[in-house]
Amino acid sequence: MSGPVVECRALTLRAGARVLISGLDLQVQAGSRWVVLGPNGAGKSTLLATLAGARRADGGEVLLEGRPPGVWDAQALAAQRALLPDGWLDPFAATVLDTVLTARYRLGDADRHGSRIAEQWLARFDCAGLLHNDVRSLSRGERQRVAIATVLSQEAPLLFLDEPIAHQDPRHQALVIDELARLQAMTLVASLHDLNAAVRLATHALLLNGRGDWMAGPAGEVLTAERLSMLFGAPIDRLPAASGGGFFMVRPPR
Image 1: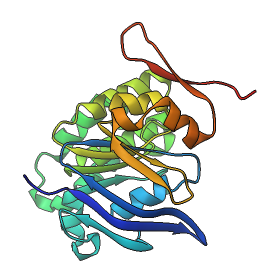
Image 2: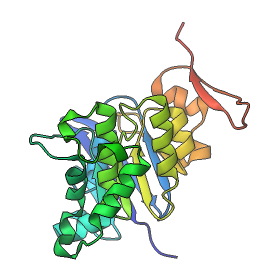
Image 3: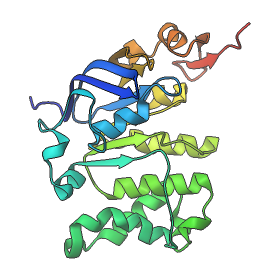
């Protein structure tokens, strides 16, 4: 059996003097889909950036395929992992297609199929009609789906996605979650706020409370009404659904 594609050993993350995560031990196996949940400011974005090698750990270590991110050269790291940050910057005019093709830059002249791959991912995220639009003209929801298509066009086997369903209407939320759940050949670590989307996507879950504490394990064991109520400081119920399973609902505090 091969080792984990991502491993945290006693990882500690801080924001100023505040400890966000303390002593995180985590192993992410190939093909798994991890969802990171926690209240605002709990360190979800900080964790994803650290796992992807875009930020240094404040203690402990992160390993990608058994090696610290800092020892990978830029092209090798880009071939191994892709990061969707929380937000984007478009200072110059560019078409949607050209924006997505930036994910293929590391391949240079060897990239003979880049446009086809970019167009395929754009179509899967309902952006096929936007190919020649100026990326700066898009709505926030459209721009987010273009960003996801860009990350997937990188064709890295390991994806770190920070709030991938942000700015999406209900139909597109479902589309994004369903498409991500179909990525059988990829390993996924994503932060979310939507509890029901997390249940649909995750094979495993990591809960962060922003005070150093964490809980990790299979989604069915971690994503319970009791644990989520404690995590978010709000009463959360798991209600039955006609289609089977159930869904989470937050009750207003009395």
